[in-house]
Amino acid sequence: MDTELLRLILPEVLISNFDIVKIELLGDVATKQMKYEIYLDECNKLIRPDLSDDYESKGFLQPKRIQDFPIRGKAVYLNIRFRRWRHKEYTEKIIRNEYDLTSDGSKLTKELSDFLKGTGRYEARYDQ
Image (cartoon, rainbow, N blue to C red):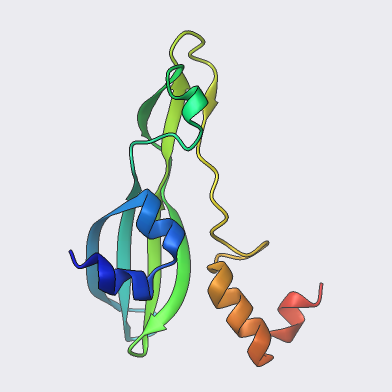
């Protein structure tokens, strides 16, 4: 997949820490409009290298769905699966990498949320 083109579209944190699994163009029955669904899986690397010897990847958590900027008038949804890391000795200790992807209290990327705040749209939503 052309990562240079994706760097223009997706936030850098996604390009550097996630693998793009699939991109689909689907019809949304509720709105009767087309939308893009982009599926991403977190790379198999722990952000804190000092913990990498103690923890091992044990699959993925439930996917998180985030809305991003529209592309060519079509809604874009990012379906992101984060890895679950389990301690090798103390199996009850589970951690995950933390990324700052969404704006507080929303399911929008930070960039999209900042853009909407700047245009004055949805003012009541952000004045709380």
